Amino acid sequence: MINAEHFLLIGAILLFVAVMAGKVAYRFNAPALLLFLAVGLFFGYDILSFNSPELTQFIGMLALCIILFSGGMDTKFSEIRPIMAEGITLATAGVLMTALLLGTFVYFVSPLIGVELSFPLSLLLASTISSTDSASVFSILRTRRQGLKENLRPLLELESGSNDPMAYILVILLVRMLGGEGEDISVGSTILMFVVQMAVGAFAGYLFGRLSVWVMNKINIDNASLYSVLLLACVFFTFSFTSLINGNGYLAVYIAGLIVGNNKMANKRTVNTFFDGITWLFQIVMFLMLGLLVNLDKAIRPSVLILALMAGTFLTLVARPLATFVCLAPFRKLSTKARLYISWVGLRGAVPIIFATYPWVAEIENAELIFNVVFVMTIISLIAQGTTVSSMANVLGLAYAEKESKFGDALQDKMKSAFTEIAVTEQMLSSGNTLNKVALPDNTLVVMVCRDGDYFVPKGGAELHISDKLLILSDRNDELADQYKEYGVEDIISFK
Image (cartoon, rainbow, N blue to C red; front, side, top):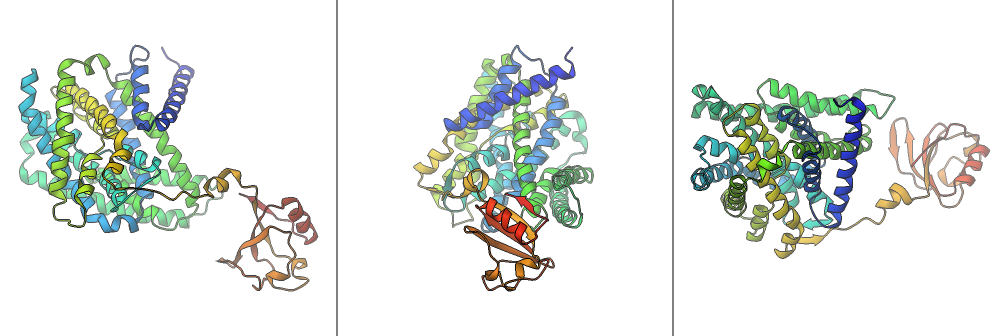
């Protein structure tokens, strides 16, 4: 019996090992998420006993909410606007076409290796892995300091962030059909379900995104850290409420993230830092749990490996490229090389494995086989495609070196200068009421003035009023502190 202390100890060790594995992965240009999965596999094989697809599914749902919302927050409207139509087409028609092509292939080849799968089961397997994985795409593209021409990065991020709803609908629909609820499912009801899910999800995401921004700006909380907690509550409320009214919660949280990230919001920098950290935490936990859930002995059976290898090869070299080229045919501005690159960066990751737990939880026939095949296909995708994201862009001539800020590290850790905030006193204006009359140490700048709620960057001749708030940057902190005493400044707010 594992008590709470043992559970926390094991969890801490798993997280520590996963973070170190991520560091190794970055050094060798490998997807960090693949190493997280490997850590889970290692500890799950004869070390830890874990067999709860229900818990894994729940953790995966929470993780996807945060990952999609955070991805939406980091996406700029100005970047995705030019490629909106292409991204939405790939996220809907592209996913459907990929699932149909792969499902048909699995149906015909599975009997050749002694595995009998009906066409609905084959289509279910294909649907679980039909969408690209947002966690994999976001983490790989954003940790590589490499630019992509033809707006490819925002296109790939938009597709991966918005195509999970389509795959989710296909999976849920087929699970219901195979679970005995197929009598009520027709072509008409399927189309209606899709339209309702997407329309309600999009509307709810926009509405709750706007509401979240309004709440964050209007509520007045003394502790700035609680703004992050409040927004996290908004994320989970958006997902759960949208799902309860038959909308697609994953689409809703992604759109809500887009709205929040592209509007002014109180304590936005603090919130962004919080979500960056919690997104990585949930990605690590999600991949660890998926690794722990896998029964390695069953996953490496010849029938599973052969089917996964055949299906993975077909998905990578035929289904994904064909669906990409057909869906992007109406859009002439993308070059053939760009279309090839989009076809190649169809990364699979945690999302397909999480979707593969749905038939397992519903006790669908051959559900564990589907889970194991999808798991091995994901490994193949992360190894073959995840490790070649940068090199393929170079081969196709689509990469360029991103400009790297020389001040990024200085602003975070290395800058000795410090910001202080003070209010203007009478003594400061004794020699005149303009900024250039105020004596300050060398290497000291007044970078901003706040007056009655309005902010402006002052020039030397700017007129100052008593009680104006000044934001001052200086690397002569001791001299500045003496100057403050001389001016009778008592309330000093210091920060970096």
